[in-house]
Length: 153
Image (tube, rainbow, N blue to C red; front, side, top):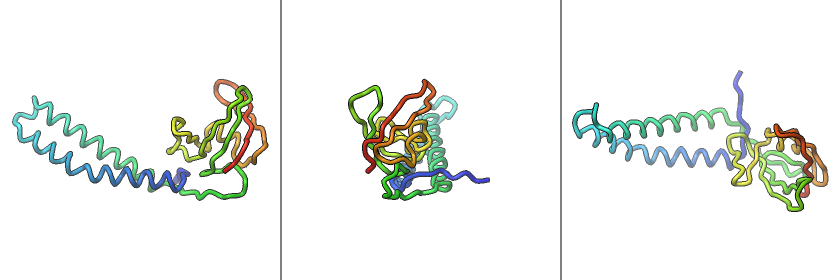
């Protein structure tokens, strides 16, 4: 059985952009490897070892990203007033007066520092398919807490 990763169109595009950047950088890294190889004895050539490792990391990253695209299920956001993949939500946590804004994204796109939470994270699961005004209970590893959906954009 093939497991498809849900992601937003923006997340899919970000992966495509990273693949393009890496492919553009590959010839430069190959050239560095070739120059390091021409320096002589490979057993004591740290430039060669580092260049080979760097190229290997680049190739590995390209394979990984390629698989992410191959098994991606791009989900377009529905504007039905419910929290869903691709939507932005404004939340008020029960222990805080301030509100916070998050975009609901696929697991591979999640980045809390950028305000992106995964739809299948504890918070994401608690608010999915709910509308503004609803208070949900989040079952997090550190314990349960309440969050109110202020707005769905």
